[in-house]
Amino acid sequence: MIEAFTIVAAIAIILVLVFDCSNGFHDSANIIATVIASRAMTPAMAVLIVGVFEFIGPLLSGTAVANTIGSVVDLSEVERLDAVRIILCAVSGAVLWNIVTWWKGLPSSSSHALVGGLIGAVANSVGGHHVVWGFSELMRGNVTGVTKVLLALLISPFAGFVCGFIIHKVVRRLLSRASTKANRWLRGLQYVTSMGLAFSHGSNDAQKSMGIITLVLMLAGWQEGFHVPFWVVLACSISLTVGVMSGGWRIVRTLGFAIYRVRPLHAFDSQLASSAVIIAASLVGAPVSTTHVV
Image (tube, rainbow, N blue to C red; front, side, top):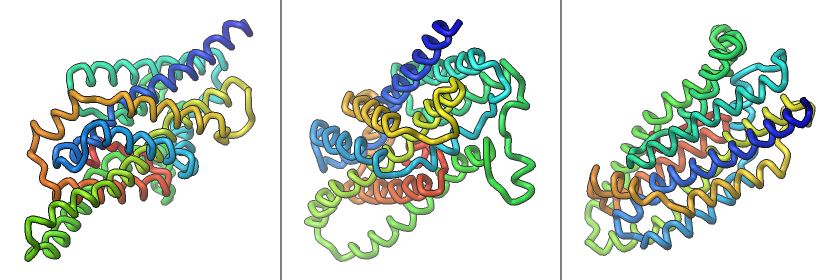
């Protein structure tokens, strides 16, 4: 039984890293599509820059989002082998969804897939009372559990819209009398904004995998208390970066060209607004969807 449990726990951790990699592969297009569509960078240069700052982001951003993800369910009273199996099923569903949506070239939220898979697996296996819904805490002014995740995922697209709208208005007003040479400057500034967007994506998305792995370590009895070990931070950072560097060219075509022919001004505004929203979310421990914010 001990050997079987160790194997299941190890598989669960490896699968979380696979999810992290698929998340990077899936979401890399969301980060680099606008900068490629506006012709500020070549695809190779964009992927290289994004990869570097994706790696740095998780290392410097703390673990507030990981703490939120780890508090969505309470499996402390569930037999530990069953608990780890539940996590394994949840992550398997999220990985499968990422693969299907990538294969179809559909922009999709890995965050929604992971949280939905976790809630669904727990509720179906051991009951909804093991899910920390957070409704009663919300009535007392404390935002936690599923409520915090849902609010973050619902509010972030609107926050991205508002920030993008305001930034676009301001920049457009400032450049109202500028010549066409302004596009060259905007393309140059996109090097900075794409770095910021990659950093923010890494800081938020890698922490979701950190939270799940740390949860597995706790349920396995391999550590006491919810604290993310550095090796978990490093492993998630590497796996996410590998995914991003692998690219997602089918989704690049969907986001960068099929939806809207992006100009340098639009790309700059989108990247700046998205970076601001995602970094702010990471600081308050709110897991958000880069796909929806962008």
